[in-house]
Amino acid sequence: MKFNHLLPRWEQKHKCPDGSEHYYLPTSHIEATLKHVAVRFRCKKCGRITAAFLNEPTYYTNKKIIDKYIGEVE
Ligand SMILES: [Zn+2]
Image 1 (tube, rainbow, N blue to C red):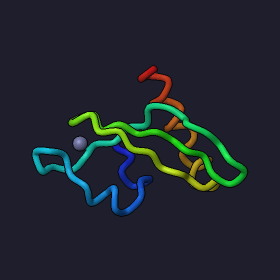
Image 2 (cartoon, protein in one colour):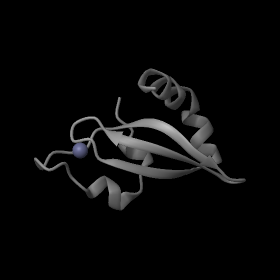
Image 3 (cartoon, rainbow, N blue to C red):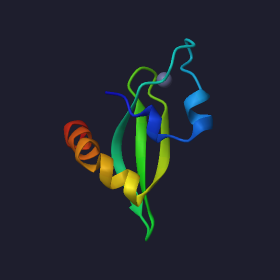
Image 4 (tube, rainbow, N blue to C red):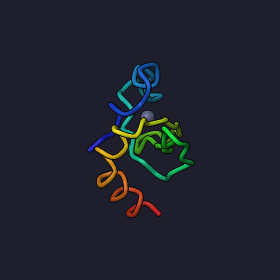
């Protein structure tokens, strides 16, 4: 499962060096503020790192699956 839909729109338009779509997976939590949780994502195809600030409802909706992937990576 890729997580591209959680990333900012401009980030979704960015492509891998070979022109295909990035395949972003969460790698770690960066920080949490009162209203947002920052999560770091890495493309499993090209290794590109990016981050997304998820608002609370989005984060908690996806928390289980995000935590599962982070647990597998680290
Ligand atoms: Zn990529």
